[in-house]
Image (cartoon, rainbow, N blue to C red; front, top):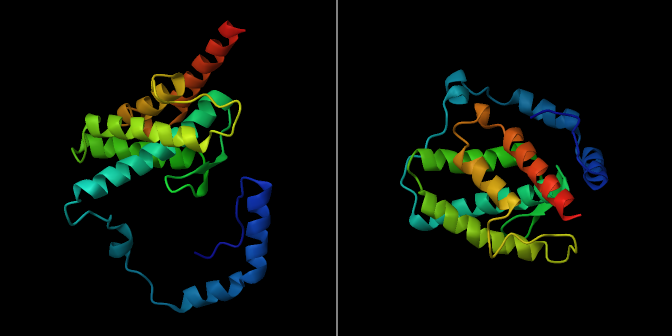
Length: 193
C-alpha cells in the first residue's frame, strides 16, 4: 500500500498503469492509510493457516487452476522462449504470467503433494485435463505445438518437474528446470532441421 510507481511488462499494461495514476490520487490514498489504526506486529507476522478441511471439489479446482497456469506459462517459455506473456487462466481471462507466478503455482502444488492434501494421481489427472484446455487456448497460434493428447513433450515434462521436484529445488526457483528443458527443446528443433 502506498506505492506511487509500478513495473509493467508490456506497452498496454504501462498505459493502463499510467492512466490509473491519473484517476487515483496516490497522495490522498497514502494520507488515508496513514490515519487508520496500525496492524499489530503479531497479526502481520502470523501466517494464515487453513482452519477447515477443503472439499474434494475445492481441492480439484485449485489443482486444476494451478496446473493450467503452469502449463500455460511453461509451454510458451519452453517452446517459444517467451518469458513474460499474457496467458489465459482457467476461465479464459488473460493474465500476465511470469516466473514469479509460475513459482507460486508450482510451489503450491509441490506443497500440497508434500503435505498429503493431494496425490500424484490428482496432479497427473489435472495436468492431462488442463493440457487440452491450454491447447484450445492456443489453437489460433500456427506455431503452437499441442501438449495433448500425448502429454509427453518437453514442455509437459518441464511442468511435471516444476511440481514434483519443487520441494528439492532451493527456494522453489524455477530457473533450473526452465533452462534445462528450454535447452532440450532447442536441441530437439536443431536435430529436425
